[in-house]
Amino acid sequence: MRRDERAVTDTGEIYDILNRCDTIRVGMNGGAYPYVVPMTFGCACENGRIVVYFHSAGAGRKWDILQRDPRVCIEADLYYQVARQAGGSITAMYESVIGTGTAERLTAQADKVAALKCMLLHYKESGFPVTSCQGLARVEVFRVVLEEVTGKRNL
Image (cartoon, rainbow, N blue to C red; front, top):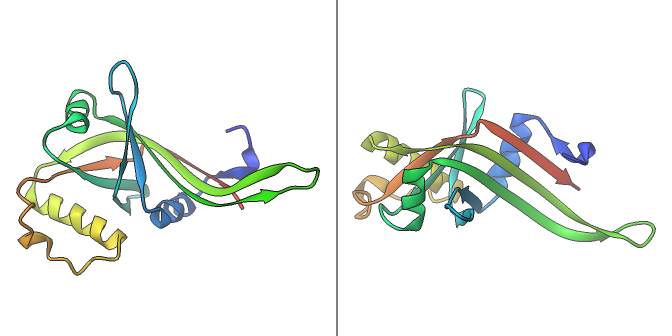
């Protein structure tokens, strides 16, 4: 990172930034070009590591790419405003998180339900009855433990 003073290194602070975001972007190795998809998500801290959950259909471009290469990059950000600076320049006020890991497909029903509940909690919809949802049998759920993660802010 070029601007060390903007680095966020504490895992708890990085998790806080991520938890306040409403969308992640999942970057994948799509072949000739990278492929990036904006996603709803859930997140948790487990054993000192940040874990991200997202869901997918069991078919389509994202599904096909993850089956070939489950390594992903997760990006999330909060943009606040542009601020004028002394000397006539401007800067963006923001917080962001970038992490990498491997997307693990959850196959056990209990794991899928727990991950979906985590996602619903993230969007303040924890009262939704996941286990009685008609789409539960068809949805695929992925878990990504962020092996490397960085945060950055300019406030």
